[in-house]
Length: 157
Image 1 (tube, rainbow, N blue to C red):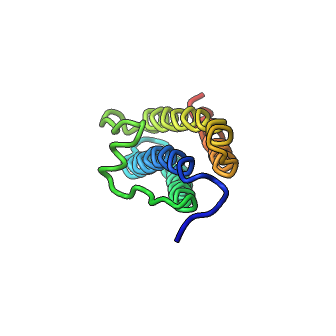
Image 2 (image 1 turned 90 degrees about the vertical axis):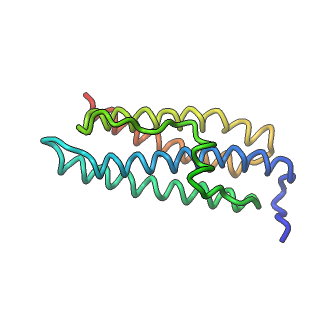
């Protein structure tokens, strides 16, 4: 069925492609957060293990929300690991450091990378592609990442 939401097919395609990159980033971050949760070691294991569980649950919700936004625009969300690794701005996690400080630094860097990517799309979505809805959606998502980044930074003080 044709998607008729007041945004041209060309604009929806461009926005969906950018959202596919964001979806890939979110999925890679989700996976890296699971890795941190599963492989954490150290004196603060319990409290940080619980915190990482909260983060990966939040991250799973972000993945789902981005995929659903792509579908709302009338496109299919990429859903293979191969696609995600081709689209992501993030890098695979190295194996050094399973202590909380090392893992938190890595997760913080990824949240900040996603924040920067989202920030670069907000005006483009609204102005160039006439999609205020997606612009608003990614603004809200960016704010959630900003809060998480702040909390991760606070752990490093």
